[in-house]
Image: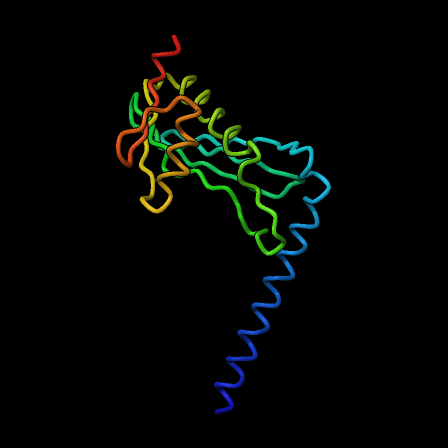
Length: 151
């Protein structure tokens, strides 16, 4: 019985602590939200590269890309949405597009011929619009971008 009570108290403490850190992160980027002056960071490895966007040193978006020869696979592109607690979203503010454009440029510099990926079925409508407006061709739950079309 005492162990159960201790576990419940520990669980409540962890939830409060998480909300506290979430609030601190949100307050640190709040002054920068209007301008959306994001800083792009890139980390490259032989078969993988990662692009992230930071707002006041808080990572708010990241993409991980796998390189296989002349093909590039966009493994995921994720926009942080921890701030829904404050009725503010970082989506639809151009951050994902900036990161995606950087992915396209880096893939082109590496000599890749295309970028492809797969969309989650639960988000297919939103993602179809997102990738479509950046020039990707959509086929079912897959998307692709031919880098040779730009030459």
